[in-house]
Amino acid sequence: MRVIVVLKGYPRLSETFIAQELEALEARGFDLVLVSLRHPTDAARHPVHERIRAPVHYLPEYLHDEPRRVLRVLLKACRRPGFRALMAQFCKDLRRDPSRNRCRRLGQAFVLVEEILKPGDQLYAHFLHTPASVARYAARFCDLPLAYSAHAKDIWTLPAWEKQEKLQDARFAVTCTRLGAEHLNALLPGDPKVELIYHGLDIARLPSPPQRSQEQRVVELLTVARAVPKKGLDTILAALALLPEQPRWRFAHIGGGDTAPLAALAKNLGVDERVTFRGPLPAPAVFAAYAQADLFVLASRTAADGDRDGLPNVLMEAMSQELPVVATRAGAIEELVDDGRNGLLVAPDDPPALAAALARLMADPALCRHLGTAGRRRVARDFALDRGIDRLAALLGGDALVRAA
Image (cartoon, rainbow, N blue to C red; front, side, top):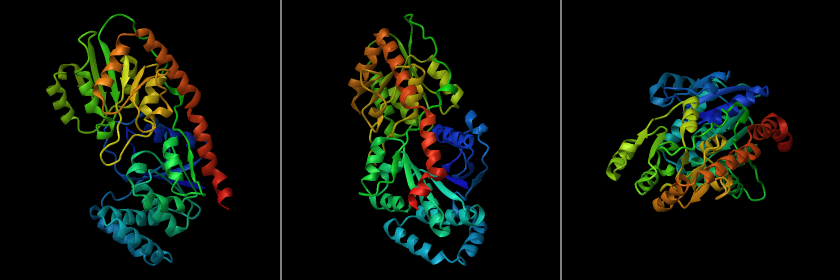
């Protein structure tokens, strides 16, 4: 049985958790076919992308860019037996979501059906929003088994009706936080379909934690995050402006997105000479930055549109390198970071509290060592990749088929 994995974009530097899952499933013998709704925009790739053998197919990103391709598959699809039933479902969805994006999902689904799918395939979509819509239309049309992996924005910004109906059509779904699993299962009382599977890390493949110097020097602060509102990068900059003069510090940000407004804010706050925006980087460079850093900081929040973090993999990565972390009580971060035991937590959108936590660690090397050691121990014990992949492989390989029958 082929597993057709539908992705919003591939490969993406910000989605190492997906790449490591794909590699691990291939190692367990799964025949994967990757289907991406968008072409890659990152200039670099992670090493794990080079190790994934699955073929990659790209659907039309915008239907008007490939009209002949779309028309050709539409003419074929309209002669199939399930066409009218699928169009009835689409029209029902369109009335509740009258958007061009909704039409694009249907067109992409027809291309997926006519160019890629074969009898006996199963569909597995990463993210409950657009990829799940395309996979769902295709699965309905071809009567193929369907599963989802839900994450963060897709859980918290979709309307309830759409989440509920997508879950009803699925054999099973997984998500990477207890918070997300409880929310989604509450939409289907009496019929929970969503399992908690943490992303986890392949600790054996990661660099060993570095020996950090205890000498008095400039303290290196690090954040790895996309420049989007839910990451709270403006809160971090505001906190940096409140730090005491000693010890001296530098701050580096790694991640994609528009950092120009953040650079302007850093200048207005008077910290621009000690702040560097390095852009998106491949995994080896990110882990080199962890090794050079003294503290990791992430100031997640709930954005105005409801978007929020799940359990950011960068926190696990930093902790795996015995890097002490300061984060916020947002999303599902408390499922990983236990305040005072393996990291420090503060309220979101509170620059003074964040500054106080950073200053506390900058002044206490012994506490930094304690939190760093405890953080790595927590990740190695409870967030190992194999445990989650074993369960996902069981679901994709047959457990869920038996249960559904």
